[in-house]
Image 1: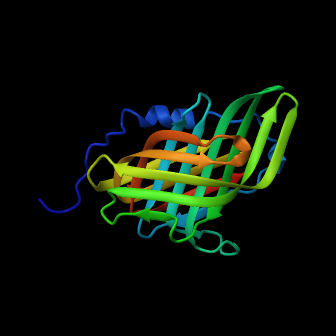
Image 2: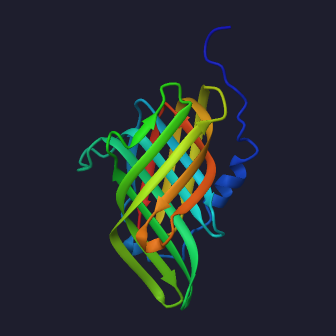
Image 3: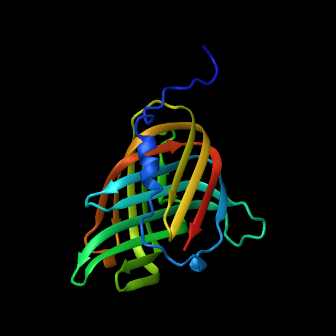
Length: 224
């Protein structure tokens, strides 16, 4: 038999729960006036990858979308086309003054060597040192720090064969939201992530599901 074939989506049992959890606000509300307008990118090219995972501590979430090619949709955008990473890491921590929730996030360009994915979409790796925004919220108020350095590392291993795949991911919090839709060849994968930010203390590790794909689509990001 010739022509594209669809395979049964092994995430069918998992995605509804994951997407429902991903839409739960990850931080206490940041005033809407601080949010930038949404930025949209057309994503295409060789390959891209995604991860949504839970961290090694309760109350930890990690989301990462990495693309080998992302082109701003707005014609007047000053953002250059090229490899791109958008991510959010949120975690609760108990401090001397009580509970605090910290969220580190960004939408940044990538070095060409930072994202490596095999041509057969069987394996992938991301290793990027970037600047992000850190929001800390507690009963005493909200503190926002810009240009906080950190390192995002993710490895993907495919767990399905290649198939024509339509994917929809969505994540929303008061400080950061991202949504991506793609269509094209892809493979579902498991993913392991490590996020290292000095301000957050020990490195944060996470395991989750991801996707390795070579597809066309749209990415939308809103930063607080």
